[in-house]
Every structure is written in C-alpha cells, then in structure tokens.
Image 1: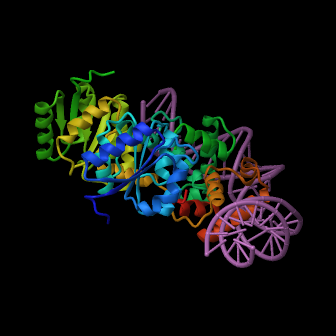
Image 2: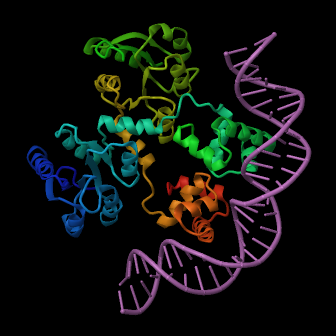
Image 3: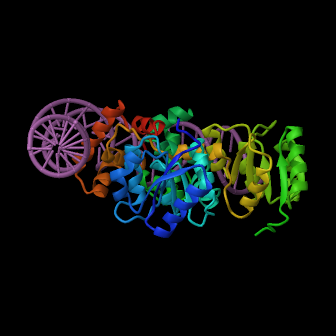
Length: 210
Length: 210
DNA sequence: TAAAAAATCACCCTTGAAGGGGTATTTTTT
DNA sequence: AAAAAATACCCCTTCAAGGGTGATTTTTTA
C-alpha cells in the first residue's frame, strides 16, 4: 500500500490554466504532492515511470493520444496507479469506456475544484469517487427499461440467448420444452420486430430490455 | 418536477431504532418531511400511494417482500418516485440488482447518518448518490480484466459473438474474411478452454474479459 | 534486427441449431 | 369472465457452428 498521507500526484491536462490551477491547489491545500504536470500523454509517457505517481489526474481531450487510449497504456506502465478522469466530456459511452479501461474515478470540470482533493483521498482509501452527474449516468446505464414490451419469461430467455445458449440449453436450464423456447423466441422477434438473434439482442440492448 | 424544498419522504425499514432515528433526523435537521415510516413493504404498499412520496428510503432485508422485489412494485405504483437503498447488504450482485430495478441511489448503513440528507437533496436534483464503498463496487463491476489472455482482436470478436452476430456478420463488420473469424474463434476457445459459444461467453463474462 | 506474437486467409468435413409456418392447452393475471 | 402469459407439438429448409490442418503477412517485443 502507498503512503496515504503523502501521495504522489501527476496531472495530464493540456489546458495550461486548469493544469496550473490544480497543481497549485493540490500542492498548497492538501497533504499531497504534485510530482509533475504534463500537457499531453505523449510527453508524459517518457517520464511518468520515474515520477512514480500514486494518482494520475487525466484529461480526455488531449493533443495526440487521448485520455481513453492513454488509460490502458498508463495502467501497463504503472499497474497500481489510481487514475481519476477530469474532463468536460460526460457522454454515457465515454464515461463507461473510461471506467472499463481502468479509471478509478471520474469528475466533470464543473465540479468544485476542492472536490478533487476529496477524490484523491477517496481513491487512496479504495473508493471510487464520481461527481453527481457522472454517478447518475453510471446508474442510468445499469437501469433496465421499466416499460419493456417483453414478459418476464421472454426477457429471461433473451438474456440466455445473449449468453450464447442454444435452445436446448435454455430449455434445460428453465425446465421447459425446446418447443416452448421456440415459441417464446418467435414472440420476442415479433415484439421487437426483428428476425434474428443478433437483431433481437441489439434492439434489446439499445432499449435496455436486457 | 416536485417541490425540491419540501420533499415528501417515506421510510421502509424494519429496525425500529434505525427507522425512528432517520425519521427524527430528517424531520428535524432538514427541510424534508417524513410523511410515513413503515416496518415492511407489505404494510407500506397499502397506504404509500396516498402518502405520495417524492423519495423512499428503502431497506433490503425486510420481513415478507424484500427490498429488491419491492422496487419494481413501488416503481409501478409511483412511477416518478426516487428510491434510495439504505442497507447492510453490499455484495456486487445485490447492488447491481437494486440499481437495475430502479433504485436511484444506494447507501450502506455504515454511512454517517447526516449523509442521507445530502443524498435526498442529490436525488431531488437528478443525481445518483452512492456511498464510497458502493460506488467502488459499481466501478469494479464495469472494469475489464487488465490481464486478459485474449488479444484485442479476439476480445472484439468475442464481444460480437455475445451480441448474437454470426461469422458472416462479424467478418463484414471487421472487413476480414469469414475464415479469419473462424481462426480467431478457434484460438479463443483454446485460450478459454471451452468448445462452444455459450461456454466462451460465460467464461469471458465471469472473468470480465468482455 | 531477429524472434515471437498476432492477424490474416484457405479448404476439408458433419451435424444440428436457427428460423418460419400453424395449432392448442394450461396457468396466471386482470 | 376475459385477457395475457406460459406451456407444448408438428411441419419444413438452410446454413452456421465446430473440428481438423496448413500457411502467409503484419505487428510487437525482446
């Protein structure tokens, strides 16, 4: 475990004002130390291993390699580093991509600057800090459509199809006949107006039915 | 939109001490009003429609219908209500189930009581409040295995298989030959030690490879 | 720069799962 | 009592899936 009191911070952010603002803020109003601040990942990657940071504050919109693509590369160089995204981008897809690729936290830039200090503390204690707008989007991404046209059984079967199960396996698992599975699948296709597994899964995922 | 200043709160919690504690806390240290507090969902469901709450504080471990099963029923009765889970349970599966079934926020009971007031404020403003331990688990559920045995291409193809796409569709989408897709699939099966789509998807999901 | 890993393409084979058509009974919910 | 959901059965055709074997090109890494 790292020394939680004197964590080493690196900032990768192309906007000079923001970069220097956070640099100053962290150095002067927290127990943490900014060991370096870079304007791009392409520059940072050459020296960041020596910086040996505990936490990286990472922007997404960077010249050259963007923050999302930088994430797995940083994780490879520094397997135990915590990475907090700090960016104006907040589409559901980008947020989910960032978290899927190893980000430990995610803040939008409309977050009060002081919150970043709390966020650093939280990741150092094993938490997963997010700004309210981000956590809302994350929760929404998990929520299913409450008004699904599919019945419970149909939803269940479509989920099993999405797991690659064939009719026989689904029938076994649900203790019903293969023919019944077929009937359900037919009704699913009719309701979703599709005529293939792939389209059914696609429509269902797009509308959060599964 | 509800009146954010005087939001109506209902508590469903079987532990009398906790229930009355939050009741008192909310009534006396916040602008919100607890319109009713119930010891179970089975009792609450008879009267909660008339309570017309903006926010429900809901426990999971309840006598009779548990909190997870109660979620969709509450959502059906009160489509616009915000539901905050407040419970000792915090396994990844239960948290994800709760959020998938319509919870707007999730706190564990080791959270400082005062935080619940902030949480109510946050949901009323469209946020998705979570305690740090919960948000950590949510983020972990989104993160992929950084040490996947699969290559990028193999991962990509397995994801498409999990979307129900057949070899031909995958080949088209990736601008490669069907035979190449076959080769990749074979290598995926070898690496994951399986010999079917379903098993490959299952192993991959269990290990967060996709 | 040489070696290793990843990605690409090809042709053989067999089997059965997938998809579409129609019909009907039982169970559950409203 | 009516409607919705879940169950089961029969017909049919086609091509995707999985296994075997071999080879070349591109990219990454040591």
